Amino acid sequence: MARYWLMKSEPDVYPFSQLVADGSTHWDGVRNYQARNMMRDDLKLGDMVLFYHSNTKPPHVAGIARVSREGYPDHTSWDPESKYFDAKSSPDNPRWVMVEIEAIREMNPVSLVDVKANPVLDDMPLVQRGQRLSVQPVSKGQYEEICRMGGVE
Image 1 (cartoon, rainbow, N blue to C red):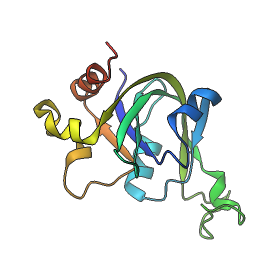
Image 2: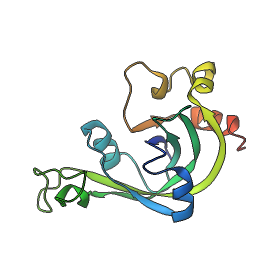
Image 3: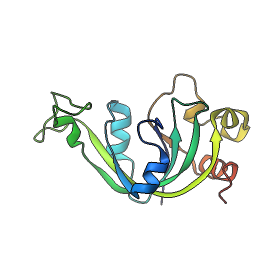
Image 4: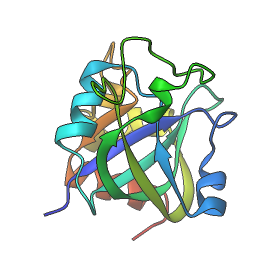
């Protein structure tokens, strides 16, 4: 049974339109242990993803993706030239993981303001104070409500 997630990316780093053009991508560079653990242990093949544009005005859900490969070692952590390099991570003892996602479809943007204004979404981690994780669980009902708000039935 599929689970539901929200994954954040800054549109000037990797926008949803780029995922659509690429078809799929690996989700690398996550350097928070809680988010890493979800990617390693909980994100499964076929899980659905709300692709969220953060650090933009207004921040918003831009599209829908799906997990196309479960967690595996994030090789960017071993590359000294990578901005995601971690000297404590190695191929023998990987500290970080990534997943792969594939684009499903664009949607009408659903702004953070609109999410906060919808009482159905009150319990979403996205609207909780202090919640800044780049990977967050979403309930099926929350996922369906965001899709409805974005014109995806």
